[in-house]
Length: 100
Image (cartoon, rainbow, N blue to C red):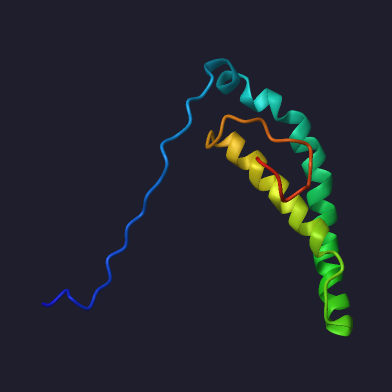
């Protein structure tokens, strides 16, 4: 069987950041305020996504896109901190740009 037609894929991953042992131990306790705020924001984002679908049918655009994208970025930062992919505490912000 000739493998010359199959492309070769490579995945390069940066090494994991060094984790502070005390923050790893207290990580879930530190995230309680994040989860409380995100719970309400995610409920709102779900409702606005549903409503935005109907608005987009008639207007051709979703006016709630920035809010929903911001909430999802915040959620992704919190999950990455929870799963120990980063050692930097996530900010209470829906900004999608920045140095985080």
